[in-house]
Length: 563
Ligand SMILES: [Ca+2]
Image (cartoon, rainbow, N blue to C red):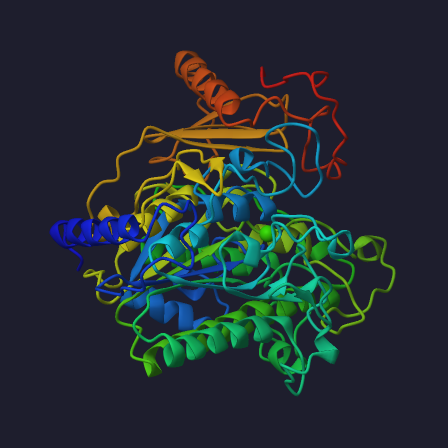
C-alpha cells in the first residue's frame, strides 16, 4: 500500500524533478523517468455494455479474466459514466465533465461552448499530465473525441497530439470488426488487410486492440523497464455491429433460446447473491415479450454474437494480464476496468425483424446489426433505460480496480458513488504528477473529480454532488438522493438510491422542496460547465429516433434547462 507519507514523499520528489527539468509548459520529453514505487496505470474501457454482462457483476457471459481481476481487487457498485461514447471518452481522458471538454454530444460542431465536438485545448488528457511526471503513455482502441478527417489534415486531436507516444486503433466511433474504417497507427491511416506490421491469420479488431496493448507492454519492458507507464485500452466490444468469429459464437449456441426473461431473472438473483444490489430493490420493468418475437432463432443469435464479442474482449484482457505477469509488472500495476455507457437499445439493422422479413444471421462481416432494446434491457439488469439516458441503465458501469501492491481487501465491494471524472484525479494522486493550470500556452480548467485512492482502503471520498446531461436528459446525485429527467422538457423524478436504486418509486411529488433545491444545483452546474445553453430543440424520448444535431447559431439557442 502506498501510504500518505510515501505519496507525499513521491509528490515532493516529482515536483522537485519537474522544477529542475525547466520551465517548458509541456515537459513531455524533459520529464525524468523515475519509477520509484509509483504504479503503472492501465485503463480498460469497453463499449456499449450493460451493468450485469460480466460474470463478476451477475452475468452468464464467460469472463474469467475480468472475474479474476475482481476477485483479486475491488468492485465498485455505484460507478458512473456519461451515457454515451464521445462524452465518456472526453470526460475520462480529461477529468472534466464532457461539456467542459467541448464534447457534450457527438463529433459535430454545434456552435456552443459545450458542443464543439472536438476535444478542448483548455483541457489536458491523463496522458499529457502523466507524461510530465515521467510516465510512458500508450493507447489502443477507440478514440472518438475528434472528427475523422485525415484528408483535411485535422489530426490535431489524434492520440499522438494528446499525450500518447504510441497508438493503434480507430479514430471513429464504430466499425466493421473484420475490416475497420478509420483505422490508424500513430498518425497514419491504415487498412487492416494491407498492414505489413500486423498480419494475424484472421483479422478481428478486438484481437488487434489486445495484441497492440501487449506489443506496447512488451516493447516497454524491453526498452524502458524502470519507467512507469499509462496504457489506455479502449475496446469497441460490444458496440454494434454484431461481429464475432464463428468459433466464439458457437460457445453460446442455444444459451439464449429461452428469451429475455429467464436470463434477466437469473442476473437479478445473482446480483443479489453477490451483494452488488440490495434485497429491497425491485427489478425494473421487463422490455419485450419473447412469445411475440417473430424469428426467435435470429433474436437469440443476436445475444449469442454479443456474448461472443464480450468473451473475446475478456480473452484480450487475459493476454494483457499475462504479459504483465510475465514481465513481473502485475503486482504494481493499477488496472481499472469500466464501460463507456449503458447497454445500447439502438435498432441498427433490425427493422426487418419486426415485420417478419428475413434478415441475415448476425456475426459475419457482411452483416451490420445491433441486438436491440430487449437484449439491452437484459444487459442492464436490474436498471431502467439505456445508453443516451441518465437513469441508471444509461450511466451505471462496473468499475473493477486491481492492484495487488495497493489494494489490501481483495474481492470486496465498494459502494461509494463515483464518476469518470475521478480517474484523472486518481492518476494524478498515484503518479505524483502536478495537474497544470496552463498547458501548451492554454489555460486549463481545474479537474472536477476526486481521487479514488481513499476508497481503495475503504475510506470515504468527500464530494458534494455528481451531475449528468446528455441530449437534454439530466441528473444529479447528492448523497443518497438522485434527481433525474428524461429529455429537455421531461419532468424531474426523485429517487432514494439507498432504498430504490432501480428508480421504480418516484418521490418527486412527495418532496417538492428537495426537488426545487436540487434543480437549482443542477441549473448552476449546467451553466458553469457549459451543458447549457444546449442545442436540444425538441424533447427526446426512447420512442423517438436520435435527434439530428442542428447547427446552432450562437446567441439564438434558447436555454431550455427550465423544466
Ligand atoms: Ca459506447
